[in-house]
Image (cartoon, rainbow, N blue to C red; front, side, top):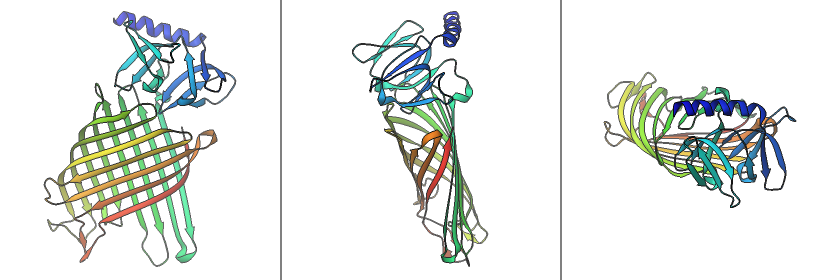
Length: 345
C-alpha cells in the first residue's frame, strides 16, 4: 500500500508538470490550465496567459477534466486521495488509490487540492483597516483586523486579531482588542473536535485581560461547498483581570471560573462576491452560580478586483454579572461595529 502511494504521488508530481487541466463553465467558456484548489465554493485555476490565478464560483463550473491526483474532502467527512472524472449524468466519479469508486453530486465536493501544492497554498490571510472621524468633539475611530487560516483535509486552524480604538475631546480613549485562536479536527461523519484560546481587553467593561480556553465536541448540521452550519458544546476555563478598584464577589480584581459553552456558527459562500459569517456563543457558569455570558459576531465581506474587499462587522459581549468599579456597576453589554477596506491572500 505504501509503495503504491509513493508511485502514485511521484506519477502525480510528474504529470502535473506536463498535463493541463480543462474547466468548462456553465456559460460555455473553457479554461485550460492547472487546477490548484477548491475551497469555500471557489475554484482556483492557474493559467499561462495570466499572472494572477483565476477564481471561479463553483456553481459556475459545468465540468472539469484532469489527469492529476488530488486530495478531496466530501460532505460526509470522507478524505480521499485519487483522481476524478465527470460522468454524463453530471455526477463526479472519484477513484481512490485503492481503486475504490465514489459517485457524488458536485455540491458534495467540499475541498479539493492538487497533491503538488505546497504549504503556502493551504494558507489564507487577510488584513483590513477602517477609520472614521466626526468634527463634533473631534471624535475619531480606528480599527484593524487580521485573519490567518490554514486548512488540510481534516485540520482547520484560524487566528484572528481585532482592534478598535476611539478617542474624543474631554474623554478617555476607549479601545477593545481581541486575539482568537481556533483549532478544529474533522472526525468521521459530521463530527469534529474543537479547541480555542481567546484573549480580550475591553476598557468599556474595565477588563485588562480575559483569557478563555475551551475544549469541545461539535457536529456539522450543514456541510457542503455552498455553506456550513455547526453546533458545538464543551467546557471553558475563564481567567479575568480587571482594573484596580474592581470589586468582584471575591473582593479582588482577579476572577477565575469554569463555564459550560454552547456555540453555533454559520458560513455562507455561494452569494456571488459576498461572504457571510456569523456565530453565537453562550457561557452558563459552573463554578459561579447564576452567571451567564454571551458573545456574538457577524461579518459581511464583499470581494473586489485584485483580492481587495470591503467588509462590515459586528461584535457583542454580554455578562449578567459585571463587576463594580469605585461603586459604579460596569455595563452588562458592550458592542462594536466596523466598516473597513482590506486585502486577502
